[in-house]
Image (cartoon, rainbow, N blue to C red; front, side, top):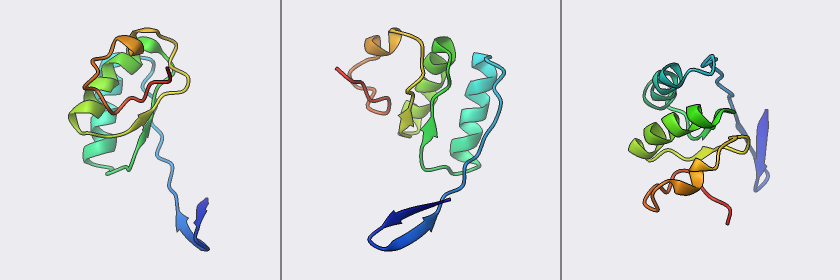
Amino acid sequence: MGHRRARRRKACLLVLYDDGSDPATAVRLYEKLITQDKVDLVLGPYSGPVTDAVANVTEKHKMPMVAPTADTTSIDAYPEGNTEVPRSR
């Protein structure tokens, strides 16, 4: 895969892990993605409770997380200081 920008291509590597819909596993895997795999951004999990758990990890590391499928309204209750999980209002 590549991203075209100003007539240059950059490689894009997708790293996937299965959290089994378990918040504790997801936290461990997101820590690994950020600290060991050195990813540039993360995609949020599907489940609301798992998204809530990993939002703390992404905020701690100032890592952008896109969570378009999170099935929770608790994201709206994240503190205003949490800038790593964008909100649409």
